[in-house]
Length: 229
Ligand SMILES: Nc1ncnc2c1ncn2[C@@H]1O[C@H](COP(=O)(O)OP(=O)(O)O)[C@@H](O)[C@H]1O
Ligand SMILES: [Mg+2]
Image (cartoon, rainbow, N blue to C red; front, side, top):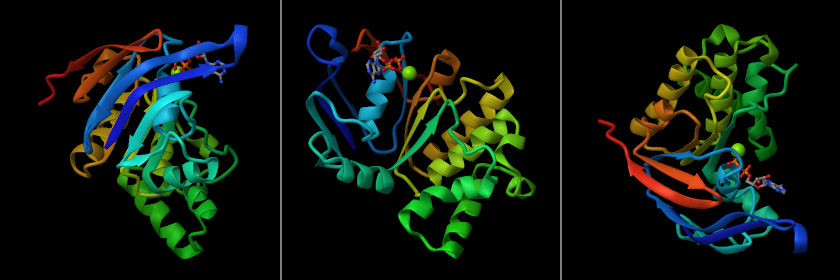
């Protein structure tokens, strides 16, 4: 469970300091699907970085599964990410001249998982997002946008995270491809019980979540429960 209490985040110091998050409090239950919306510069990515243990807040407390994450060292944050969290970014962040399989295996290389198991887990993750086996040995820059995003999701899944964070995962995709990617997230949430938080600009995408959290000027402006069936 995610519990943010009075979280603020400032960038810079003194005159030039900018408060990107201002006294944000909210909770996400295990197995929830939450969408975050808000204008550009409102603090969405900053919030996601804190939830994802990529950064710590300037003040306030963040508790993840009962553990106070806001005071951890960089090494401890890295452990939290490795054990609990999968990230999907809009810019995909795949290595271009590297095969699909290798891209998905990479997080496990850093984790020290041995070759055979690495391979098996990467294949399983790729199949679970519906990528055809014929693409596994292709270089990631030989794929379509939708295929690349599926590889990015597979890579986020390879450490079997309970929490998946996605920053505009459908932002660069056409409508049809975006729907397929969204269906993948829905399945990971509904069938596998994973907690999902996505940032999106598209109301249609957000309607697939249980709740929509609207951020404005670094604050939660509104929380809306959707009518998802
Ligand atoms: N590393 C940083 N250093 C300084 N300012 C930053 C940094 N990251 C974000 N900001 C500022 O914080 C505000 C919120 O940014 P961000 O969370 O990326 O917004 P969003 O994702 O909603 O577009 C913006 O004004 C942005 O310029
Ligand atoms: Mg952003």
